[in-house]
Image (cartoon, rainbow, N blue to C red; front, side, top):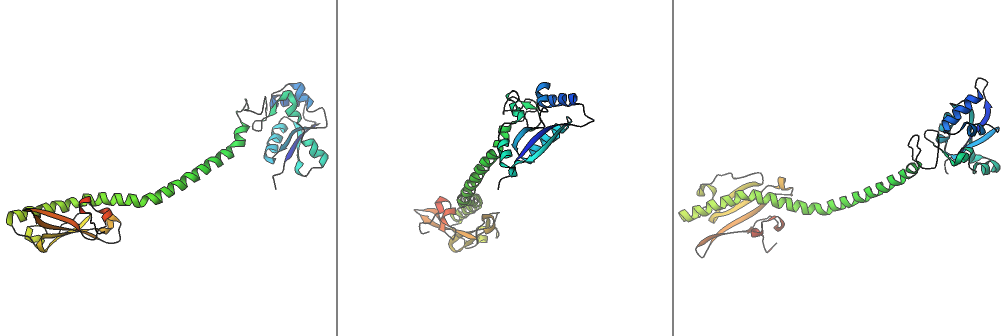
Length: 271
């Protein structure tokens, strides 16, 4: 069910302690109209001054008019008799005065239904603000859904890219160790079987690389830490040296690290 609608009625009752001329003067000042037009509001026992308004608006009008000393009352037209209901649909006396309209904010009469020149109230904004809010709320929801969807689909791609960058930076230590082993073999013609054989530290690591271990025939196993890469377990890249046409070359396609995280030179054709 909709909200109740109300009718505002001004009567010609003037209290004994009120001066009618002064009341008329105050009404004229309130409605920004002439005293003659204000006096017309008091010519009949009852004059409808506003129709089909909500209770809060009616009470605002009531308070403004009573401050002038005039008597005013509110009628709930939602439950009114048909004759009164039909009457309530007609323009009110305030709406008729010089074709002007009553401002619901300051109580003055304004020239049209547009912005009130006395207080700046714009009823068009009042009526449309909820539509505007709903419109932008809908847009916000749509954009949020798009952003969440984009995040969900883009997150794996971003994580892969971020891990490749981390691993590439971490492998600088592995490449440096590989170069030291190459220089050692070329200088001594001995293929080390452990770190100490190549004069390397027992523990070689950084924030990405957990360890670099040399095993038989100078095979170098690089173990990557799982935590900084946000993966389920530690992964490895295995570097195997060999002689090719008298030159020492390395193959880094071995190990358990997935191809998507490997440098291009270390990607395996078998994964």
